[in-house]
Image 1: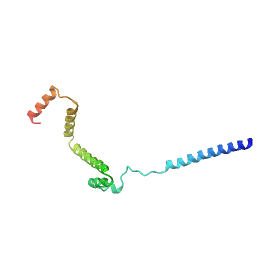
Image 2 (image 1 turned 120 degrees about the horizontal axis):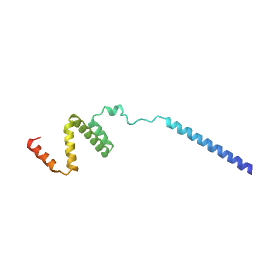
Image 3 (image 1 turned 180 degrees about the vertical axis):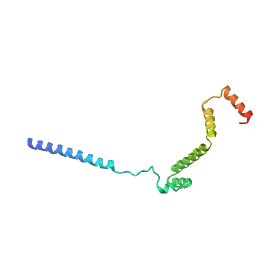
Image 4 (image 1 turned 90 degrees about the vertical axis):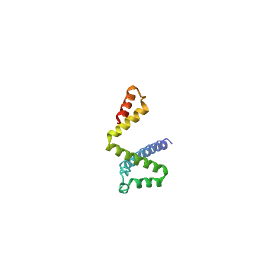
Length: 119
């Protein structure tokens, strides 16, 4: 009986070690398998106009369409801002001041000067 138990333990250990080795080999095979890259646009996506991209997104769902539309609008705004960065800077600082800073004496004086000079 002791011989049977000891031989059973030996077989169990060997099968356990063998199963671990097989598991390691299989996981290594999956590690080196090349996955498709969804970050690089395919040739059909590169040829679509912005409106076609929005229309295609709406075919998936309304939320995806809205997201694509917002993405295209923000892209167009970024292009406009890059063409005239001084204007964008002035608009951004004005919005920042309106939201975060309470007007003091200097800011009120600047507003008066701007209205008088017409700038």
